[in-house]
Image 1 (cartoon, rainbow, N blue to C red):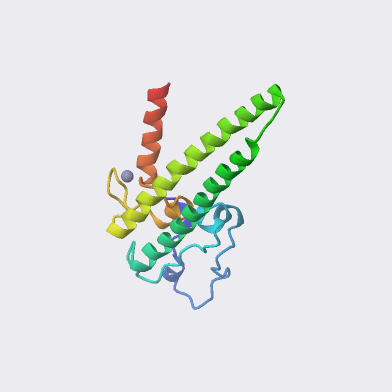
Image 2 (image 1 turned 90 degrees about the vertical axis):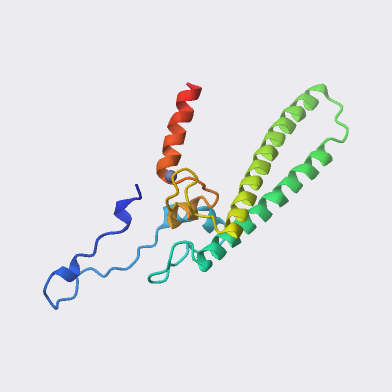
Length: 175
Ligand SMILES: [Zn+2]
């Protein structure tokens, strides 16, 4: 289920008065939640839907394409940085202890790189889905994943319900 709290039902118009509503319906700046999204990391404001705009319109697809491209570029340059820093550090270290520490560090960096590569692959899959206009729909049940969820996780391929179920199943299999 989507968070119902985010879209309060406007019942003001049912009240037969000419009075203005006491509280103006201005959008509060959501510092924590919106700052934490992948989109905002790259300076993209959350997508503003036009009235009656259909889900995954051209504008929305373009919005997420830009975010994914920026994210991918950032990760690619990180992979490059890791590689070159490893090459720099591998030059002669005489002490055996230093060498052990260095090997540990390399192992961590390699794992990080591996994660980054996997993420890049996921991003590429999302970019392909945008091209195919399959983007934004749950792979399992087919419903709309939703703008808010995609804003936070542009590579999401499951709706929140299917994702939660998948995580429960995974826990059961591992436990
Ligand atoms: Zn689903």
